[in-house]
Image (cartoon, rainbow, N blue to C red):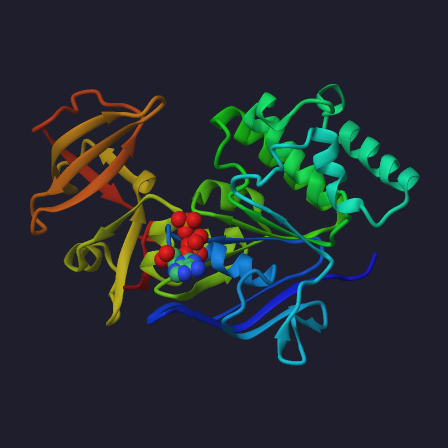
Length: 334
Ligand SMILES: Nc1ncnc2c1ncn2[C@@H]1O[C@H](COP(=O)(O)OP(=O)(O)OP(=O)(O)O)[C@@H](O)[C@H]1O
């Protein structure tokens, strides 16, 4: 297979007077899944649309392998790209088989049938092949939309919130299945989501967008364990910002423009009254654990959250004592 990757270099785009993204660069190697993660409206889909040549008014360059998507000053659509839309964008007047077959009109009939039969089988859609789209469940429609794109054997796929319309169970099952499929086919994939857990579990690398630019780009482990800013840490994990005086008491010094953070599950509720005193504001039952919303009485009433598995004697308005290990504190850019 040819070695297809995607590279976005110094990409910027504005709509009217509104700058959406500024100097964004990221790359995807063959067989890699890269996720673009960011809040609603930050420009994730706009990047995908630009790679698919559905958006033209950007500056910077987009390469599919060595091939720049600009020829003679004009953007062009690359044949190796498959785009899976958030709303599936299936043809309602065609049945399942016809939807999958749609883009294969250039092939002869035998090759067309061979590819569609293989996909129907692979995607568990054989029994549904004559159904109209409205007769399918959300999960089945999603499988048709992916099969339709894979029918023309793209080397790059762009997935815009592909799990958005699925319930939690189906979502988890589909994530595992799709990741395996992408790896088996050796595709280069860009996934767009605003779901942190999805990004962490699906991706080889993640690009976090903040304030019109890529705040950090790297492996999920790197971003989770070594966030380069408060924004990244807060986006990927449940954390608390600690008062500077408390961090210094624990034994760290906080450089200028930095802040000390600790994940909510790294704070321990202890019996030792010499530790950090806190008043409980609220106790939330979260299934197999509890979250305590507490106020640090001696630190300007800073409010933090503590994850605990046991709430013996812990109730609203009662006092508790907290311990934080110096090794669990990270210093990150504000
Ligand atoms: N054709 C357009 N004309 C004007 N503004 C646009 C156009 N397309 C997108 N925008 C604006 O650009 C911004 C980014 O949109 P985009 O759809 O890329 O965001 P997103 O991060 O994918 O959001 P979501 O997670 O909600 O899907 C939004 O403010 C949107 O309103």
